[in-house]
Each structure stands twice: as structure tokens, then as C-alpha cells.
Length: 316
Image 1 (tube, rainbow, N blue to C red):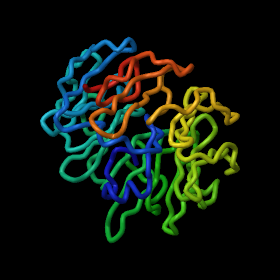
Image 2: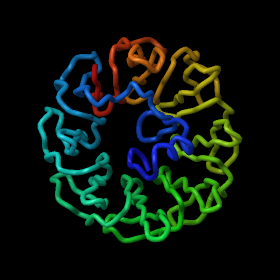
Image 3: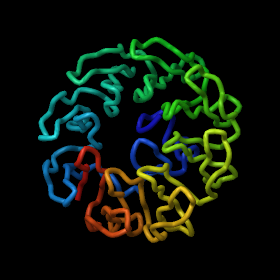
């Protein structure tokens, strides 16, 4: 589950090592990204500020609304920067299929775009709806993840250590034996658990980690591309990968179309990819490139998110 704290940051780091931009994530961002003192706003694709930096934290737009933090609480704004749902939640995620997971009073539930509770807070963690289902976590003696429908009813009973969202009708799950595999919507394994980590399918391929290397598999579980030092999911026909400690972009033949040259990079979204230059100190800056690898917006931001619905969250 993304951006929702399932375990401690230490455990997350051990499991994930790294996380790519967008919904399909594979690598953690540098520590310089997202500071407590910065203010976050939004730019358009020319780099012009269209929503003035004013929030404690800001995330990409999804289904017309963006998640922002103000005064230690989460709410949602529209593209004019107006608060549509007042900051009131302890934690929250993006809207997907009309609903958003929110945390209040230590439990997670789901709201609609008016802020009305649709599924009562009752889960110990909750992910976005995707393909009609959402992964949720229930903790009693042990914590287990399963999948609910939009009525809040379990369709796949809690049984997994961790579970990611369904994508292209498959979901990566972490079993109690310690391996990741893929299930279908009936909860049946389609790709047997055998990976150290598995990520959601995108454009027919999924990133997996095996023997501390990252590869791309098809829906039969066969290795198609790789290995790499790290890798992002495919988006818009390209995928960012780490080779010899630099990030570049490959196509689906595994050929580099943008040579490795960036210190950090995330998946393409709406024709642009977020890239970072510098070490992980105050000198680290984010900018955006096009699919030729040319800068469209020069590195200048202390923090930046992917473009979504024409806008990107940034801070200086």
C-alpha cells in the first residue's frame, strides 16, 4: 500500500529499497524531497506557478482533486486551489474510482468527493480502489491484508502480509512465507510467490526484485527485460531504470532511448518525467524532461511530483 504507513520506515526501506513516481512505485525519494518548512504549490507544463505555494504538503491531482496538508491535517483542493474538502483527516490518499481512503481516529475508511463517509473507518490501513477492489489491512493478533468492494464487503478475505492494488486484473501480494506473487480477482495465484518484491503490472509488464536485481516479467511470470540496479514501471511506452548508478529510460525491447545520466528519475506522466540532479543535500534539485531526454523545465525545485491533469506539485 502506497504512502500509507503499514510498518515503520525502517521496515519499508528494507522491503522496498526504492520507489518510482506515480502510483506504481519502486524507490524512495531523497531526504531533501519534502521538508517540514517548505510550502507547496502547483506549476503548469511551462513551469509557471498556477497555485501559489501555501500548503504543508501537496500531492498530484487525481479525478479533479488533489490531496494537501494544512495545519497537520489532510484535505482536498480543486484546480483553482480552493479547498473542496476541508483539512480534517489524520492521513489520506488520492481519489480513485470516485473514492479516497482517509484515516480518522486511528482507522481507515473511504469518502466520496463531497467528503461524505461512504465506507466507515474500520480498517488498520487502506489502499486506493483499482479495478473495482481495494486492498485493506485488519490487525488482530496479526495483521493481514485482503480486498474489499465498494460496499466495504470482503471479496478476498484477509490472508496476506501485504497486498498492492489490482492493475490489469492482477495484484501483487506478499505471503506469510515471505515471497511475493500475483493473484487474480478470485484470490487465486496466477504467478506463484517467488519474488523478493513485486510491483503492479503496467502496459503488460511488472517490475520484480529477485536476488537483489530488478527485472520485468510478463503475465506468465517470465523474465522479459533486465536485470537492472533499480527500475520503475513502464508508463507511456518507456521505463526509467538505474544502470551504473545513473537513471535513464528504456523501451520495451530493453534498449536505452535516454542514456543513463540522472541522479534520480521517475516514470513519465503526461509526456514529462521528473528527474533529479545533485547529491542528497541542499543542492539536490528537481526538473522535468521530455521523451528525448531534453529539459522542458530546468532543475530548480527542492521538491516535485509527477504531472497529473496538467499540473504538478512543487516546492522551492
